[in-house]
Length: 328
Image 1 (cartoon, one colour):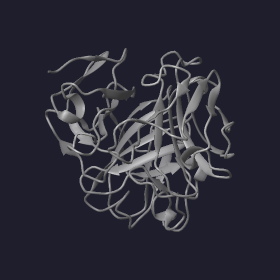
Image 2: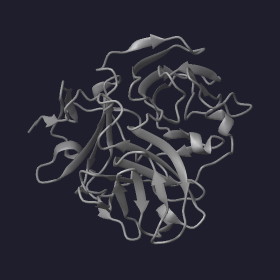
Image 3: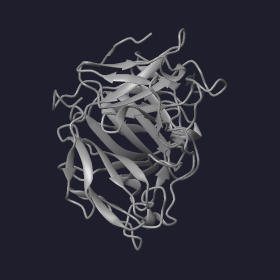
Image 4: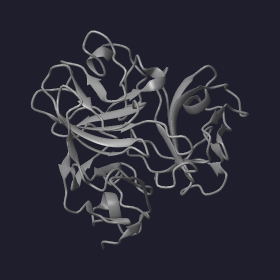
């Protein structure tokens, strides 16, 4: 079966997760595709595996849809799935020479999102990201070898953190991830700096993909908050009603937590998925939130999302982009 799944725009980054199955039968992996790498080439946020070419995974990035294949991780009969989609530049890439190393970029500058391809060489270098503002959230993954998903977040700019793991943010050798191997270098309006001697971001002979984001008023917000340990939890101001909310405690270990308004269409949002595990969807004990008109209200005191004094980074996208109707 190969059904068109409507998105309303041409998706360039498609993230699919089986909601029903976890790790027991191998069908619970998070499946990430983008139109720069190619329609059949998947990566999994919950593991370190290299890019896998699978013709039964994703079949097509359509003009207003995507088409999954027959792979159990994307389209098994009787299972339910969720897919999150971002628009870049319709699959059209260009060479970017803003950095010391040429990158291949497709960018949606209106939405503050770009997909960047580059090759590593075990040195420190800069690559152009194609956006018109400095990225606040950057995710890097090796395509050719088993390496970790390395994340830069502006709220913990002296640290790095891994998307595929539950580890806390770390300052140890942070300059070898996002820096010049002497000090951390925060991304600027044209380039991201990547350090030497670290296979997560720059190993000779490896090819990498990098996803870059910056906040767009009324559409997206990237920031941090401090937990208060109360069922009357912290309020996270975004300036819009979220449709999608990803969070991670950064001062200690804990799973990434991902919520959205399609799996939980009511105000109470409790069905969590975990980008760093293949676990099935589950209602979070001590972990539900309210999506309100201008942000997220935490309603539980669980340590994974609202520990007293805990630091949490987040990534949010709007239900209805107010400022830019095309920023989807």
